[in-house]
Image (cartoon, rainbow, N blue to C red; front, side, top):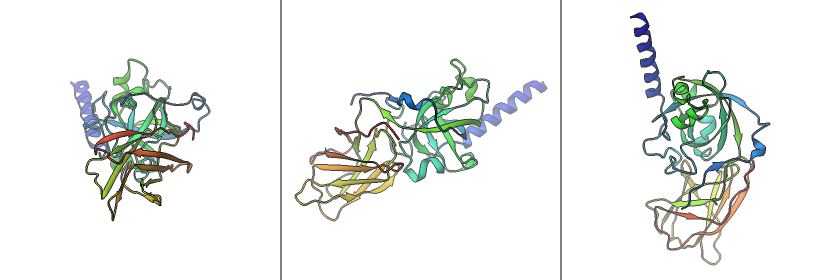
Length: 276
């Protein structure tokens, strides 16, 4: 009887922890990383928890606080995570890639998994460590020995090692999702699939009119940027991106057509190099 009660208590404690610790919440390719970064990384200590379905992508809507859509599908494949303040960076850390691994639990494989920051976790257990990921169930389980994913997911809070790595969306260029509600006086775009740093410090657009100059957008939330215009905007729109980590710039000429349709993804013909 004592053994049964103890087991029940541990189970209830684990469930309570997970309930309290959830995030605020074309042709597909897989996210990979350059092999030369698989060794010799600067690993630092952090911690991890998980939320959502055990083999899911985290949020029920497969989105999150960065604005990315369908993170359960390629190229994300549910290998996503919320980041605390030091990782999420007020939304400017959205899209950055990390390798994570664990070794302090019997189910840990010690092998790294590559993940993308797609959401935020700012309170509770997420503020108890300098670097904390509240991972999707899929991500958390990916650090386990094959066949022991569920065992690892019952570990509760887990000590991990993490390292920043360049994103590499093989076969994909940077894409722009024109958000619902965009109109001639208001343009809102989600930037997706940026190689290398993955994060953004500045997004600018150039209208398709003679004498037009680059206009900076404001970060609306996460990886979504907006322009509230005092005049009717005229496309096609070129987009200039500047990364947060290393200040690299990339120009996508005429990436968004003049007759764009809101809630549509437009693939550019350019991409950052997959290095930091």
